[in-house]
Image (tube, rainbow, N blue to C red; front, side):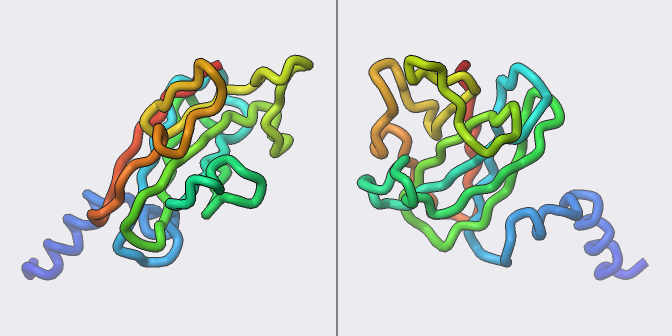
Length: 149
């Protein structure tokens, strides 16, 4: 077997086949998000990315991109293509009933699981962009976000 054939075989074994397509177009900047702590395996996970405009963080129409990933366990993995290096923030919610809406009770408190990059605190309301912001400079950035219910 030639070196080229061995290298191709190694890539097939080491890199999941769906990795490139899951991340969209071929870019140099990829964000791998792991969301942990789901209480059920129903519905979908909404993963929303915001760019470095703090006034747009969590605002209607302020997102850079959103993926909805089917839930099949207590952890959700996703790969997103980013437009380039910079500062970003991520917000997620477990859309358990798959209605594409973040459900709240009559007091405005969340009924579905949610989380933010850096596991930004939410004791006194939603976190600021600064609390959730992280830098992307290299080819791949990995985040782990723990859901809160």
